[in-house]
Image 1 (cartoon, helix red, strand yellow):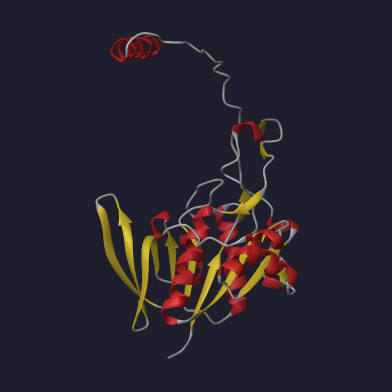
Image 2: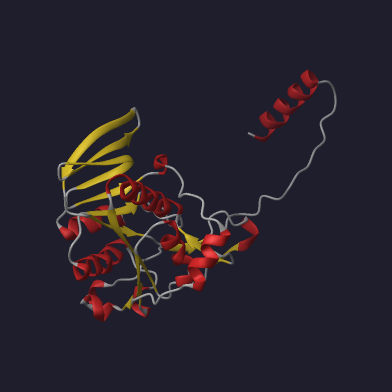
Length: 263
C-alpha cells in the first residue's frame, strides 16, 4: 500500500489568548497591533493533530507549509516535534497581509511545487481574522474535492471519509483522494509536547527550506493585499464597580435590578 502523503497548512499568528491590554488599533494606518508572542493558529493545530493521528493509524508522511513575510522556524518547529516529517517556510515581502484569494494562490503554488500528495488539511479558519475562506479557495485552485468542518477523518480504499460538523450534529461525507479537508476544533487540541522534546528538537535542528514567491512561480499580480474599509478602536465604556450586600436572594434581586437599569 502506498504511503499516505499529507500536506498541512499552518499559519503563524499572534497568540489569541493574549490579554486585551496587548492589543491596540492604529486607525490612521488601518492596522491592528498585537504585542504578543507568535504561535501556530489553534485551528491549524487541530489539522496537524488529525494528520498525526492518521500517521499513527495507517502510516503517512506529513509536510507542513507556513507562509508570511517572515515566519519563525522556532515557532513552527513545534510541528516537527508533534510528528510532522517536513517543514517548509514560504517567506517573501510579497506574502505580507494578503487577502484570502492571494493566500490560496501562494499556497497552491507551493503544493504544486511539492507535487505528490493525497490529502491537504487546513484549519477551519485562521485564529486572527477568522475569515474561514482560504481552505476552500485553495481546494478550488487545486481542482480538489473539498470537505469542510471535519470533526473526524478516516481513510478507506483511496477515499477520505469525514464526519462533518453541522448545526444538528454531523454528517458523513466521502471523497476520492487527492482531496482537501478543513478541520474543526472538535477533532481536539494538538497533543502535548514536552519542553524536553522541544529542546531536543532545537538542538538537533536541521535546515528548514524557505521558498519565495519566485520559487513558487506565483505572479505578483496574483498577490493582492487585504483591503480594510474601516477600522476603529472599540469605545471606552468605562468601569462601574458596585458592591451588592444582603442575603443571596436579596443580592440576586438587586443584581437583576442593576441589569434592568442598564438596558
